[in-house]
Amino acid sequence: MSFADLGLSEKVLQAVAAAGYSEPTPIQHQAIPHVLARRDVLGIAQTGTGKTAAFVLPMLTLLETGRARARMPRTLILEPTRELAAQVVENFEKYGINHNLSVALLIGGVSFADQDAKITRGVDVLIATPGRLLDHFERGKLLLTGVELLVIDEADRMLDMGFIPDIERIAKLTPFTRQTLFFSATMPPEIERLSESFLHNPVRTEVAPPSSTASTITQRLFATGAESHQKRERLRDLIRSAADFKNAIIFCNRKREVGILHKSLQRHGFSAAALHGDLDQRARMAALDSFRSGEIPLLVASDVAARGLDIPAVSHVFNYDVPHHAEDYVHRIGRTGRAGRTGHAFTLVAPGDERSLAAIETLIGQPVTWEGPDLSSLPEPSERPRSSRGRGERASSSRSGRDDRGRRGREREDRPAKALPKPREPREEKTLAAEPARRRAQPRPERDSRPDRDSDGTGVVGLGDHVPAFLARAPRPRSGR
Image (cartoon, rainbow, N blue to C red; front, side, top):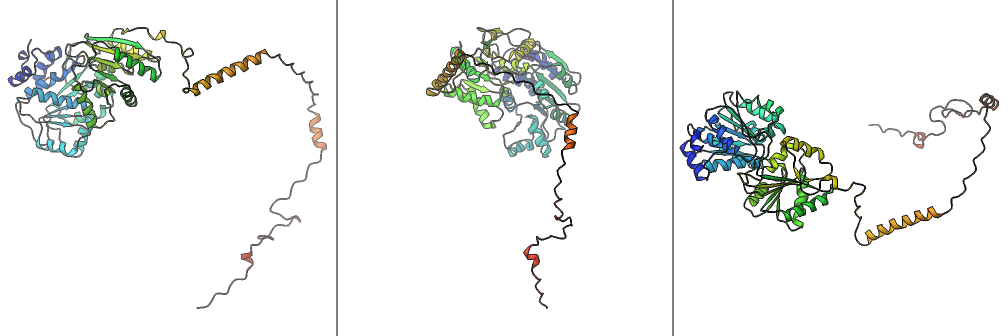
């Protein structure tokens, strides 16, 4: 089946042909006709299968009729991260070359004034992150009563990572008669139940088992020590020895670890960029652009880069840390092996990652192959060599100190044992009855006189003999007026 059989307009078909695509992907083949029919859609497909185009292409066809009004967008697309929102804008620019549609992007890190100016002129397509969208609404710069189509992309992340209150509030601000689309790579049952409150009689389009991985990705596990320097050394060896290596995204669980690993790779001569949520928007876009253009072959990133980023030619993905959530593994390795290309996903597994690894294998429904020995071959913590506390003289002195202590211990073992002291004879036990009698025989000591009385027993009047000097002076006569 071709794109012409899906019901898209002629302008959209020309743009798709100009982009070099001739056949739709399975998710596009199933979802586009239902979107054009104004049905709510719940689309589930593994990452890298063209979910973005599955809602961008029919939206362009539907928007060919009608016009935008000031401060009232016609369609709204919600994305969890700034990078995904900016990527959707690129899709509209690529497939909407034959359309005269206005598109606005509302994300953090950009001036409010520029965004307000675009909204005031009226936009056909509004692409936003939930937080910045609500900021504009609360400032009175935006109305959502004219939204005809609402798209919630990466629905599991939007609903599962703290966006539920914002999404519910935004949905209430849009008309009840709107059309709603959910697209995601994973849809756990509890998240699917939440999505039922946003969708009305939806059509479920599922082209692959939820949370499955692409068959074009070669997945391997590599055992490594738990120490940070051991993991960094292991990663450098894998990068140097990787076959068919072109570029790679290296995922870490924490933003702090991203910065440490990025600096370490640069110190060892690797060209790398960093990407995480604490960077400002300009730095994040600069890192992505340099990686996309091939100027920098390594991108060290947090999970902010794991969702939906379309960089087709990524050859390798390295999981420096095993993700805490099994669904994140699917999204991470989905950055490679896209659009039918082959890819490689390597994961460093350290002691303590067994539970997270088991959850991943349960989610994807298959075991991941170990490359080389597994964790059981690593030495036990007590058998692992202890690192020296210093270099040069400090290390040698610590070793000599240990030798001296061992030698002194051996000398103590060679000495003859000292004779044990004789046990003391037990004291005579005192009878309990004699103790009270002895106390009664002793005279009781007299109590000290109370501190507030004189020795003769009379009470102290006033300050007693201790009168301050200033009180003893005669008062000065007051001069008459």
